[in-house]
Length: 174
Image (cartoon, rainbow, N blue to C red; front, side):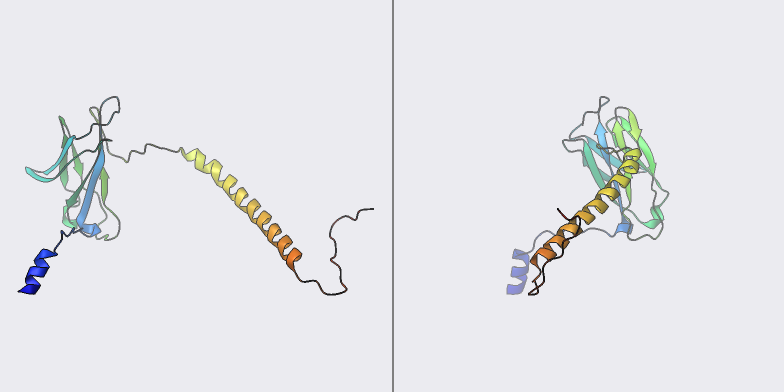
């Protein structure tokens, strides 16, 4: 009896998270027509007449709703609704993939629905093409500089043999 009381007294809430092949995350932003975030907007997801998930946006208009779906649900349609806007989405996932997160981005911007990940800091592809050789050159240059510094330190701190002077490299001064 004491054990039962102790278990009840020290029992905390346990958060369970389903495996990747049982989760389907629907997330995105709800923004006004002028792209301002709509905080506390209610987002509901239905499969037929049944509500399978719901949530509210945060102060930046972002929401994330985790659904418990299985491989059998791949290809099924769901209605995502916020306010007066609604869109039908189809579950897209790789069958029997237990490792990759299943995420569907649904963004409501004014009356338009955009099904892609909105990145507030978007970097054009050409930046990567230009930056790659510059970064490679800098890495090679710094490797050479560091190697030369270590060589100088090693030579400066090496013990001298009696009767031998350091040999100078480079041009002689006259």
